Image (tube, rainbow, N blue to C red; front, side):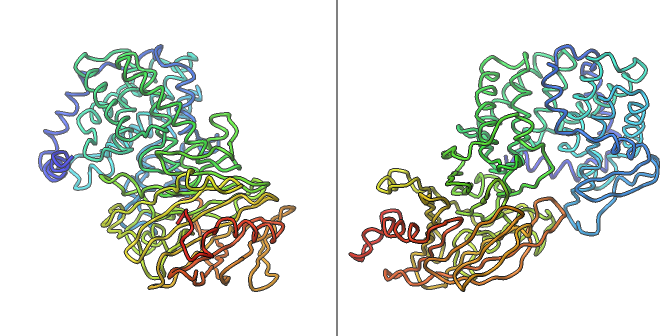
Amino acid sequence: MAVFQVKRIVRNKAVPRFANLYEQSIRSTAADLPVVLECHNVPTALASFVGQFYAHTPSELDDAAGGKFEILGRTVDFESIEAIDWCHQLPDERDIHLWRMKLGQLEVVHSLVASGDPAHQRIAIALLSRFGRWRSFAEPDAFAVGWSPYCASHRLLALVSGVAIAMQQDNLAEDLRVPLAAFARLDAGFVWRNIEYELRNNHTERNLAALCLYHLAAESISPKQAKVLDRETSRIIRATVLADGTQVERSAMYQGLTVMSLRIFASCPFLSAATRKLAAERGAAAERAWLFLTHEDGDIALFNDSWIGEVPAPGGLLHKKVDADAGALASGGYQRLSSGGLSLIMDSGAIGPRWNPGHGHADFLALEVDVDGCRFIVDPGTSLYCTGRQRDRDRGAARHNGPLYVGSEPVIFADCFKVGRYTRAVPIPQTTLSHLSVPAIGGRVSTADGQCSRLVAAVPGGGVLVVDRWSKRSRAGRTTLLISSEWVIGTKDPSELTAQRGRYSTRLVVVNGKLALDTDTWSRRYLQVEEATAAVLSPVSDGLGGQVLVFGIGITRIEEAERLYGEITRGSAQKTEPRWL
């Protein structure tokens, strides 16, 4: 990876000085590639599946014709295609300009082309032509905007899937096909020369998926290129898709993109039988893992860098129901538990891969909780990628609801995608919890100030009991739960809050500890901040040199929770630590 990092730095500095020569070399590479002509080899179901990641509404297609785009919830009207500022920056974004990147990905061309409407297809050509005339290798940030390998990969996936759908329905005239094919071939030539091997993450996977789909649609590939794609596809699958199907960056959003990539890989006849088999097997596992990380509303969990709307809702796309009792993703470090009308997902894994944990958050032992199918306790989400205080807050442990030591962060973050100190949580083995009479899950994380542990047990009458423990008292412990503002919060007494959302209601009861209320925010969508109620819970001494906090979510009979707590802490009367700590 270090060699590729050096090559990337040298490329970024040298290419603007020799822009014309470099562009000639890219065009030469592209000229040797086959052209997308018929797309007979692209299965209709595959083209449709890929296309759903880039689908736009009819009104968005009409807006694009006039240079107007709604991206990440923000609308910018350039008033015409010719007036589009491809370097447009939102005032919120300082150094990571994701809105600008997504504008350059031109995902809208998928639906413009796939619609089969010649007028829409001409708009797609106009957009691509305008973008093509604008981008230049002479710009200092050429590889971040006009010639970004990641953006080019998304453009290819969107364009080629759209062309495949239109051509298979005989809805793309020859005079329109030629300019679309020419643009796709140039982007493919560029990606071939700039596969992001140095990242070994979702970027690399996207590059390879785009090239595989391109050559599948073009119905031709040289033996040398087929060998490269076979080798690198196998490598990226083995490196980034764990045995249980979890994408190694542990984001439900990127998990969805991995599901798409694996379907493409499994469909490519020029890849070896072994690689296609690997892609199909990991693909099936990845779909199960994606559903595992899906809430009962059909959309994704927000652990690590994730937000709603970037990928299709898994429940609808896969046409499968979420299993609230799915158990655990052993390799991925996620667990599920349900009781009555309550279900939850727990993060008890690593912050991400050691070689590139940039999309990880310190959400160790954090929960996302649904009540009667509605999100109740939420993750703070990802509001933006830019370096600064808000990015640090989004990623930090203090904003997540796992047990932590006040003023102490288990992970050191640097810039927007760097981690200075790597940490991971581990699940409590089910064998350790086997003495309990009810289903339970849990995890531990070690920090510089001591160990934090969490056990979550299903209460027989409905709801769950949560027991948080801190092994030391050198710093005060704390657990902060964010509750979506869609729930109206009330308080019965200092140890209990009630929550109402329409005809649904639930409560949070502190059995052992203290409760205070505050206000905070969360983001289910990028660049969109929503209000939340913060339930700030403080532990008490456990009599063993540590701290303990016990609270119930959705429980109806407090005596059940108290009885279950006694069962969980069996052994503490003899001043010994419970087996699960």
